[in-house]
Image (cartoon, rainbow, N blue to C red; front, side):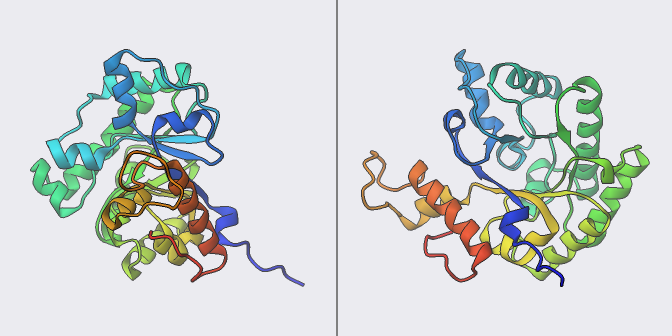
Amino acid sequence: MSLPPPAVADRTTFFLGGPPSWAKDSPVPLMLSVNALVRYRSRGERFPSARCLWALDSAGFSQIGQHGEFLLDPDEYGGMVYRLMDDFGAPPVFASVQDWMTEPQILARSGFGLRQHQEFTVDSYLYLTEQFDQAPWIPILQGQSVEDYVEHCRMYERAGVDLAQAFRVGVGSVCRRQGTRATGHILATLAGRGYALHGFGIKSDGLDRHGHHLASADSYAWSAGARRRNIRLAGCTHQGLDCRNCRTYAMAWRSQVIEKLKTPKQLTLAV
């Protein structure tokens, strides 16, 4: 008698996007942005002492989207990750390289083309893994079509990188189309190549449809959802008018995302 396959929630690690201060006692894995962590460096403050699993996002979408480039050069970024490994209490499960997204608005902001963004991403992985070889860097794939992502795989292969041996292979530029059939095709194709995939910005709809292709995923969507919908939980005492920075709401949101994966159509909080 064969057993049913495990639920997506039981085999996909979901990292909740949140501020660094939560890492000191978070009961769930967190995705932390370098945008928030760099503020500690600029103010000369000590990092919180992490006591949970966490991963690092390079904040490429916001930095390139606003400035057309990364604000930290590769040596500054690599050095900061080393400092986090020493001073943050617990090292990251993985750290994103400085990957260049391929959404049209990001390409327009940088002034470079899709293939150039893919080349920049491979170059970032090669440089960081050579110069900061003790950090848990993961390669990241970018593209728009299935063919784009497969070509990006070939770029890594030509550079001598075996993606099938990587702990995780990040998949970017899919969060704004995560619920589409095209994204499902992309993830299925990459998973079929034997990669342990991490989906950046994949929340409930994407996980519900495509989570069986992913080893892990993350999302900060709870904050934007609370802001857009003016959500404030009953009993919240924070000063903000909505729960965009509310840990109670964030944890409830994550719990219901996980529950939705086990029992679809049960989600009640806005996601």
